[in-house]
Structures are given as structure tokens and as C-alpha cells.
Amino acid sequence: MLSPTEERLESSRNLDALSHLEILHMLNCEDRVAVDAVADALPEIAGVVDIAATCFRAGGTVHYFGAGTSGRLGVLDAAELRPTFNLEAGRVVAHIAGGNVALVDAIEDAEDSEEAGRLDASEVASGDVVIGLAASGNTPYVGGALAAGRTIGATTVLISSNPHARLAHLSDVNVVLNTGAEVLTGSTRLKAATAEKLALNGFSTALMIAVGRTWSNLMVDVVATNEKLRDRTVRILQDAADLDEEQAQQLLADSEGELKTAIIAAIAGTTIDDSRSLLNSNGGVVRDALAAASAR
Picture 1: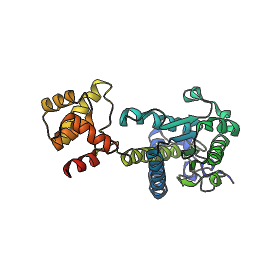
Picture 2: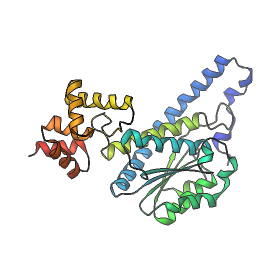
Picture 3: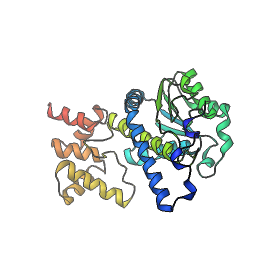
Picture 4: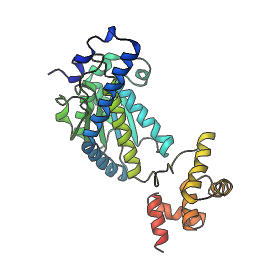
């Protein structure tokens, strides 16, 4: 059965006769379909967050596998977690058909190798989570990775834009982002990719919240690797503890730049060493550390 992403969209049959503004309006209108498609799939995505959080707490790894645009989106999502949440290397790992060169050069035939997917999944361990990313739901590379993950004992997830994906039987959780036909027939870098990006953003952000990488709506695990992020760290501490800029800067210096430690010290009134101890004994979760401090 033909994937919906390969069908022709009736409303765009005269695409090449439209003005530039009309083309952009049509693309924008269809992009809204992507938002609705993700909304429809939120219960399934939430289930994947639950599974991944359990995996993370046990020391496991989340793996993304994709080809082409899907693979690049997986790499993007995984890469952005490290500076945003101070995520250790090897916790969310992205694999793309064709390897790193495929990030900038299209290697279209790389997706056709089921064996390559199996080989790339050789580092997956039992208890890990394998997430296959394939707009069509039929990509052999992704199928190989899902099959290997299932054999190893990992939880397998498929995220596609095809309600009839051939790879669905290899997944424990089948997430369908039903975006339908593209404005430009078969060009899944459009709304199918937009939906996938939204789903990955939502999944990984909710996962990081679930494992304590945030406090309130603040990025308390942000890595201050440049001037912009150093300024943000000071602002976060000011917001969290109602401090002025000078107080926040001094407390961060006293805490050796450890934002979570500074937040605990400021709010709970504990020493720097005691704040670190509270964090360590509560899994690095600020909310739990503050609760433990107040229960004393």
C-alpha cells in the first residue's frame, strides 16, 4: 500500500502556476496539519516518555534511528540535549543511515540497507529504547534497527506518518503522525518532517523534565559554555531565588558555577556543601532536594 506521504495533494495540483505568496500560504496552511497530527498522537508519545524515563533511571540509553531528513532530525534533537540539559554523552544517541557524512550530503541509497540498521544497532543493550524515525514507515534501515533492538530486549518505537506502516509490527509503541499528502508530492521534508520535529521536541523535553533536569519552568541543568548562557544562568538564579544580579553572581561563584546547588542554598538556606549533599541524595532533582530540606 502506498504511503500517504507519497500520494498527491489535490489542492496543490496547480502548484507551479501559483504566485510566490500563494505557494507560501499553501505551505503554511499545510504546516498546521502537522501540529494537529502531533496533538492526535500525544497519548502514544506520553507513553514513550514513561518508558524512556524508566530506562533513564536504570542507566539505559535512548537511541534514534533514521535516514535522510528523519535521521538528521534525530541527530539535531540528540545534539541539543547536551547543552540544554547538561546531558551526559551516550544517554540519547542518534544514528543516521550512511553515517555522519549523510548529515550534509544526501546518501539516498543508504536507507535501503536493513543490514546497516542491524549493524548500527549493535551498541543497543537490553533495557534501552530504540526509536525508529521514518516518514513512510517502511525504511529498511530503520526496520533493521528495530528488529535488532527487539532481539536484544530493547523497547522499540516507530514514529512515522503512515497509518499502515510496514514496520509497525516491529514496534512496541507505534506513533502515527498522520500528516497525509505533501504540497510537493513525496517531499517529506515538509509537513511530515515538521510533525516529526515537534514530536521529538516534545518527547525529549518531557523526558528531561521527568528525570529532573529542570525545576519549575527553568533550565537548571543548562551548561554555561558561552557569554549568553552565563548570563542566562545568572538570570535563572535571580528568578528562582528572588536575588539581585550581584547576589546571584556571588552565589554562583561560591557554588563553583553549579546552578542547582546555588538554587538549593538560596531557597533552603543551606550551606553549599549541604546543598550538594541534598542534591546527590535526591537524584539531582531540585524539587525533591528542596522537599527534603524543608522536611528536616
